[in-house]
Image 1 (tube, rainbow, N blue to C red):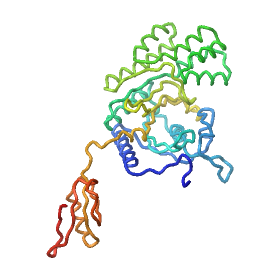
Image 2 (image 1 turned 30 degrees about the vertical axis):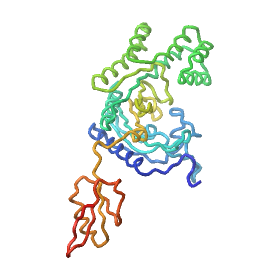
Image 3 (image 1 turned 90 degrees about the horizontal axis):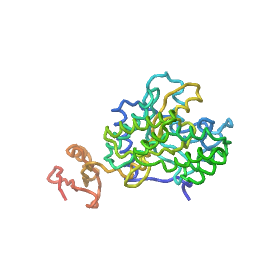
Image 4 (image 1 turned 120 degrees about the horizontal axis):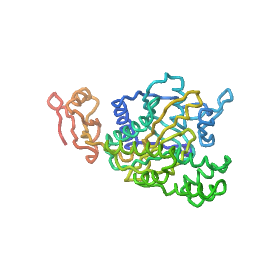
Length: 374
């Protein structure tokens, strides 16, 4: 009644855990050489609805401004940052961001993200740095039980090029592959190509598992150099992650892109405990085509809300309650300094002992203040 659908109030641990996660992210990003970047929360809709991005206007929070232009609350960080950086000098850049995105096609319209964007790096450097950053960040949160899934959007795109597909059929096929509907993938491909092409695409639905899947397809595609090169990229990244101590690695050779600007490897992380996706990203060189420049770009975004649900302080601070009145506040403020690295809560009445590790009361006795432990 008092809030729009999809909006929510937050308080207590939900808020403090989120800020703790974001502060951990900032520290890791700084130590890995990232600069901070922020974009306005209000953007023109055309930044996100053009052919290079193709986000759906109906899924955005939007309105008309005084000049008749449609404005929206930021639905995507990567696109907004690409707009901001499109005129920057072409030199290696590493950027980190934190903030909200807003979409209406989900239960809560506001999601909190933290992420990285890496520009003008050689092939695979952006992908490897993104995933090694993810490993460092999750480790800083005490999260070790997660799975990294690797994919490559150009595997599917290369095979689809052999078919005679119109736009509507191409989208149907992409959605069927995304939903892992093998029979539907085969039927659509067969109706617009031949039996061999349909069989190859349908097989991708099951091309999921450990690194051995790549080995199998290296043999299967040994006469298709472009596909072999893509598999070699995935294998190299998996090797670097494994030798750097990352968690389990899976591959999905049938992974398809959800936005048209992705143009290479895709990756995401799953938490073993909840099976939730905690980060996702990939290579998106095509996004910068809109601004007329050939740019090497890769990155990923963390779901801060998912990570905050698992976050626990490594060593919770001692909680101390001081019972005082207005006359003793100066004394209490000096006393506070003696409780280093503790949470000190000043109250005027007796507190619930279950909320604190220690409760003390300030009494004025014989002309001076005394600290009495309760």
